[in-house]
Length: 480
Image (cartoon, rainbow, N blue to C red):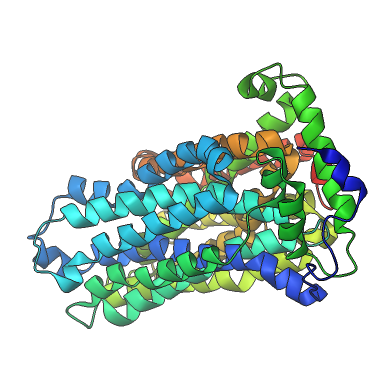
């Protein structure tokens, strides 16, 4: 490629697609909005399906190990998808890789939804479909934050990436609501819950077909600044200096090519990048290591313990309360992540989770002890419910969205996809570990003791963020 052409305008005025500031911002937000909603739809539906009496009767009451495996197969697929994203995202491109993953997601939803339109009596289609959905989700959860990081302007990057988490939790909430409305009262409600994710998956395929490739990928791996400028113009308003931004990306690309004597993985471990790589990986692990999915996965049983209400409809409604909390509080990050910064929100959110989990622990201890009945027990139960929702609230505006933003901002373009992929693998592995050990932990030390353990875990997380995370708000990605 002859880089001297950068001295002249890369696009003529007739080729320049002018956008207003809002139009450019909206176009940058399409991928995280549609993708987040599609992913959330799959996260939120399976719990209500597996708890359905109609589901259990249809499959002759599958054993607990089978049900546990059905619940975990998506997370296992996510680990595989995250690994694949590490090299396929660089080889195929951010947008092209995401498009192929969206096709796999659509295929998985159609397979998982087979009980709705066939008479199959085997769980195999649900297992296979959920596995495909998991692989697609893992790939997309790596690729979409990276894509957004590379196309959004520095001043709005945090807010745009935060919409990814917001629409994940919105998709979860819609699934919770559908479960609550359909599963207890409609015989095929659980089948509809499994199948409906095909709708947002199809929407994702359509949306990605109209979006351009990442301009940074086009330069770093495609050596095509003209195509990069064409793509970047679609995400910038007319006041932005696209030519200057392209020059900065090219300068980074040339620097990478001059230093290409070492392998990428060796450079990941080099002294120049080691600290940021380790911090990025820890942030990915801490997003789920703080115990948030105890609240989402086990919310029905925890709420039931607190309230004493065992009805199926009430359990599903309690998950709706969790979903509403996520949806109401996640926009706080969208509004303030670029104003107050990533580190500040993480510290505030972690501090709130510590206090809320301590409250759950203390209330749980008192409810099992001196206040095991009567008015005091009821009051403590209500306080515990509020504390559980507070854990979800503090997570919603901090770790939920911000942990998707920070790893991409800590890393240079040529390392970003690979390290973010590995970070996401650790994220899903941590999530699986937390979910799969909670019942054993709570059996050993009680729910109150389990919440105390995670309070201590969050104290450690708070100290790590305070000591090691640098603020990345407004940073130039070429300076990472």
